[in-house]
Amino acid sequence: MKRIAVKIGSNVLTRKDGTLDITRMSALVDQVADLHRQGMEIVLISSGAVASGRSEIKAGKKLDPVSARQLYSAVGQAKLINRYYELFREHGMTCGQVLTTKENFGSRTHYLNQKHCMEVMLENKVIPIVNENDTISVTELMFTDNDELSGLIATMMGMDALVILSNIDGIYNGNPSDPDSSVIREIECGKTDLSEYVQTSKSSFGRGGMLTKCHIAQKVADEGIAVIIANGKKDNILPMLLAVDSDTVCTRFIPASKPVSSVKKWIAHSEGFAKGEIHINKGAEEALTAPKATSVLLVGVTRIEGDFEKDDIVKIMNEEGVQIGVGSTAYDSEEARKQIGQRDLKPLIHYDYLYLD
Image (cartoon, rainbow, N blue to C red; front, side, top):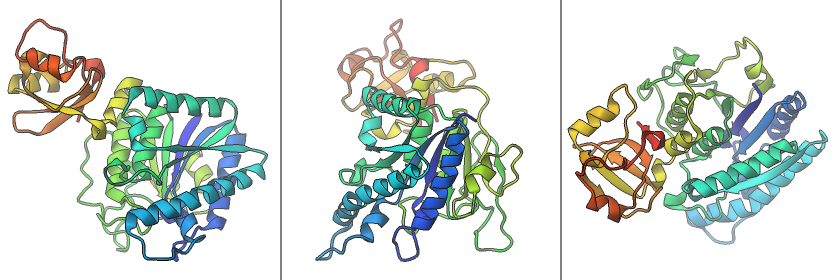
């Protein structure tokens, strides 16, 4: 592997009292530095800003959750990146901060600008440390958690693998605290439903849970990138996971063998930025879900909801109102509405810009 993304979760970097675990952070930096020395390109997606700020400041009055998150992350982000900077400098390496928001992935232009920034950093041997800008990301504009962000980064940067470090060994086939449960070691590419196994409780300090990790991991693996969920509190976990023929306990999502274009990867993760809905009839749905690649044609469209511009992301809905995919539209909504049901026109969504669920 030449290029990997490593997501370090809140539960890995946070002590029981909610403050930052500097010892664990230092150990993980040592591991990343060793891999970097061996010529591997690494992007870190790091939680811990809120925990870092929480240990630094005591609010004068009781804060609502959004205000607390903004305050702690504003203070904590500076402290966290400073800590990373000092730890990497001990290895003679430089890291750089990339703060992003969900909106930055909604526009293809912003998306490519971010990608270019990180490519330049990697070319110059700088280790990007990515986090959501919690000071301005609130409510509907937030990522589900940094797992969602790490999936977007992995696909955007064309990673060979995404390693998601949590505080348990992987995905269990039951409750992790049950002695009869064991870690599912491999999950094949495809639509395996893991919801019956996965606990739906959120992590103690993060916003997401294991089910979120599974959904992200499956989507990323479907796009041809290996995904590993493992325990970041284990000593030397990264080199052990990445060793040839590694038998370290973890859950590995086997990547699809057929590569996906960079545009399709962007579209696959853009559902949250959809500006409208394209409703299609049964015949159009059958054509789209058949083995042969097919575009969304206006002749099969029954109605269009929302206002959108050309190239915006839209959801594709079947007759029952169930979403079957997302795509980038070749028309604006006004023009598309005028052409509903018409034959022999350019596709509303070309199959190169279409991702089916």
